[in-house]
Length: 186
View 1 (cartoon, rainbow, N blue to C red):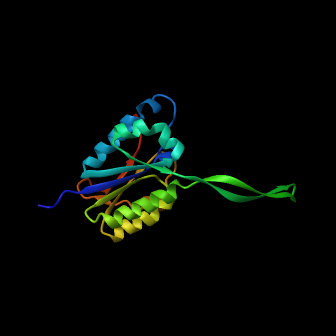
View 2: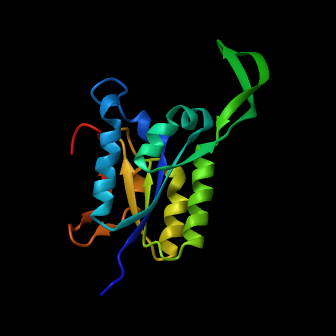
View 3: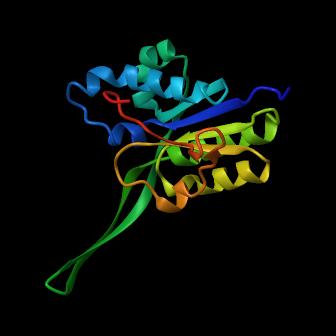
């Protein structure tokens, strides 16, 4: 008998949230949406950890919600970065300025944690990335190179087709392991 599948889940909260309407009934059913996601995952195997990544202020504002769902929240920094801006008016360069803007480091932190988990937990058989963002292609490539299956959760907002190509096929259902996160529909 084969050992059971073990799944590590990495959720880009802002990406999933961006794809969800924030008015009722979707907002009121957000928890139900995550419960449905966990149900879908459990059909494939045992969920060993669900990490959720967001800026620190978002984690703080939702900490009880994440705790009740059994998620491991990871607070990601918003670091100031110099951005050069050139303004052109009627084809004439009017001004150049440099200002500090906060840059969200969620993707970078998620990638680092996912790569660490993949390398340190050889018994993980599947990874699930909840984001349609092409920035996570390196994580999917690393997982596949370590013999792990890739599952992807997307919202309705145009996911990266290149990233979706990394989703493995479910052998029983004979379809790609891609889940559309929708709090009010199965």
